[in-house]
Length: 540
Image (cartoon, rainbow, N blue to C red; front, side, top):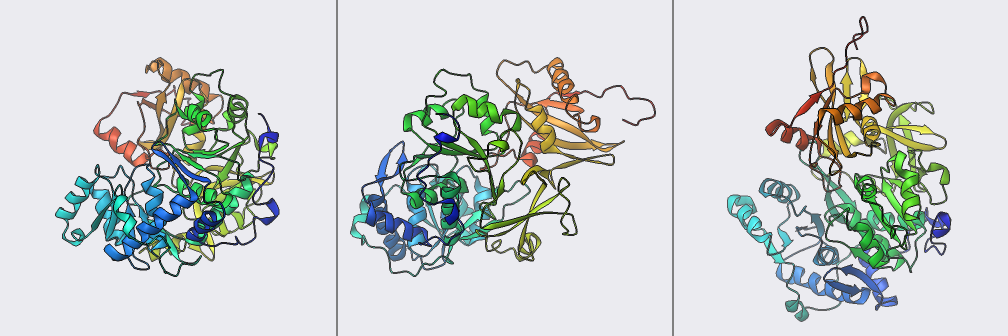
């Protein structure tokens, strides 16, 4: 299947209904409705098995009663989840919400310092985990007196739940009820917890279902960690349309499309480096042998956009949002002119978007400025961080920290305000340089940072991950930079290249540049200084 004709036409939510309020405003209400109307339809599919809406309704109700009766969970109590991608993750999440609690997702790769911070910051006194993570939790409890009373709930213990009632606990839950303390990826120090309500999740699933044109006969697939928000909004999406969610243990570039074929997935969401890593896999005659109707993505490489569609035979479209705001911009499947443009589409019907200067004034079309957004869904604010909330939510507008340009009726990202290199008098967006370098066939991914320089203040350095077999030589570095000179202004061309085997990444698959810099400082690799001969009188 190719082109727009492959997109689902029998939408559960018509485009003109996206701005309407969803008829059910809580996640637990959505699950109860699906269990009542289609109890035998498949809902969750993991490597260890498959479960229907009815089975998940019963399991989560039993567990919710256990949380209330045995663990003392009351409305508003925070309950943490530290699990890999297993079915017990969404089970715990939905059970916590049924008990009136607030879920606190914890990255399952966290070590003691990170876990201590999240437990202490959130005030969670109950934690779902498994045998593999229990020793770490015990270590944290023993070393911190204020965390000694954190209760551990074994996520795998299901047999004992039969003695609890199968109906939902009588706890008042509404759209305004707090559902999650969702910690951001923490690329700039300790993460902040976004306060997200039931309405946030329901509306996010509702909007994405309408934008993507999905319906009951679709199959949604995800491979990101469940502690990150993508599998969670995919869950809300599937509760909205009544379709199954396939959850992979982790993302594997070499096996992802085989899983898409095997599960007959019709929709998936990818982000960060995932499109590039997928495209760098060796082409296969089976590439177009799939049931994909649409791929939504954040940060599709513009130079690969058309080739991604051609290779796998389905539209790829941009969607933009943050943990703080859910979804702000989207390119519809029908928006053919967005392909390869780098544009993120237009505001979804529930959002307003502007591009402003540092004083909050709208800039002219074609000029860059900060992207700000208002509307719903939107976080209530940052947990325990009134100053941080006031800094990003000003006058009803969320300040994203992203630099964007409004053009051709859509929006295109230029970079991050804090992810810039200041070379002499020039501001260089790291993302722009990264996109150019990643067009090279030998390059898998890059990360551009500023390094101190006596003359210019900062110089441009690129960490580069090469495809297998590509030599990590000075000649390779020179060739990559020489090609980039044809596409970048002279002051933007990297002076330094350091080859790396991989990148430290956040749960959202973005490169963690602080961790990358720290790793490079502790274990420096070979850095090639590609300073070209200086032209007399230019200073360049």
